[in-house]
Image (cartoon, rainbow, N blue to C red):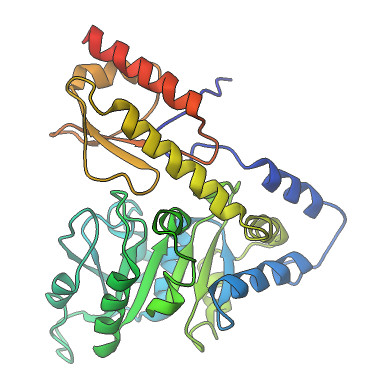
Length: 345
């Protein structure tokens, strides 16, 4: 079976060798199921060390489950969640937040996927009016679907606005590790210290085989989450296998090393292809995503050797993603294949 490098998604990479070793260690013998095991206890403690003493982490199977469960904790069915039009919860979760969570998504335009307080303000109306969904949460994505990052100041401004109107701030952190590396800030500085109430913390895109975490940062919010997680079919019986991965990822900065490699390879890729005829890198490359415009014929030729996504058919705009295991040689091989495709097209 082919195992060629893909530039389509950081979901396409395998698991980091240390994660595989952690899984093997967790596989020895029997232990109590459903999270009453030493691996889960240790992993939750590591989250508290990184996010603050009040942090309560719960493990789930995937990113959509993490987002839906986290948001459902904050919302009743008549509530609304303000988010970017391009947000993953709006575009790429097949309606799960609204279907499973039961709340309404209130979208706003967003430059590079980043919403601003002015955009949020457009949705802060109708309070107490029974004919309208009631705004209850603002959800931001760090890093955004377009690879941009929120600074701590930007997150804090949105948090203060949300809290002033009685709303919570949720952060979809599927690539929070990449954003932290790009901004040279700690995980706490980008979340707890900025007023984030609940977040999803990504593992699968950063070296794990499977598993994500829902992390509550405001005391009291997690009190009944265990029931909601079970009801939403996200309670893993053999939870030690998710927890063991997170414990290893957070143990000595592996999460940051993986993000640093992925981000560095994206910057290298952007630098390598800039200047090639008819190739336009769009925006700044802050994390591990590179968005480019190039002739459609060249892109189709390149896709015969490498799998990647067309992000906008009309532009056309393409997305290239790097991962923790992408190497400089992988980038060079890809760039050379692009040069050949451009010449042939």
